Every structure is written in structure tokens, then in C-alpha cells.
Length: 93
Image (tube, rainbow, N blue to C red; front, side, top):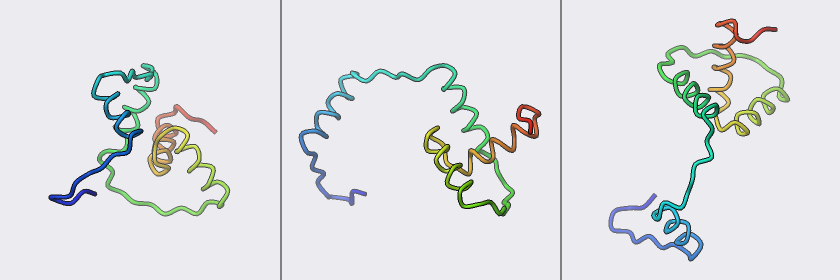
């Protein structure tokens, strides 16, 4: 994190990326389906007020972490979404 009065230096690759972004050269490839997915993730991650502890195998833990990374969401949010979908009847065993 930059401290007050500190100068920030960028290498040439970083400068090129910043210039590219500033020139509106970046185009989103986000589909409507993915956008709705991320909106749902945000909605389900807000307003949580209960904490739980569960025991799962280490393999299951690493697998759910990997799925979270793959989908761009924290694993805790992914678990909460799965529980919510199950409770809504949208996920069955």
C-alpha cells in the first residue's frame, strides 16, 4: 500500500496496461448468465449473521476451494450458496 508522499513507479509493462485501460481498450467478455451468477453471489454474501463450524474431509475442503477459485468466489460464499440453493429446492441430493 502506498504511504502518503510515496512515489509509485511502474515498469513498462505496467504502464502499457494502465494506458490500455485508460484508453478504453478493454472489452468485457462477461455474459449475462455470468453477470447474474455474480449478482447472486453478491446478494448471498450480504447480510450474513450466523456462523457455523463443520467437519469435512481435507480433500473436500481443497476441492471446494478449487471450485471457488475457478468460479471467482470465496469458498465460504460458495458453500453458503450451495446451502441456500438446497434450501430453496434448486439443488437436490
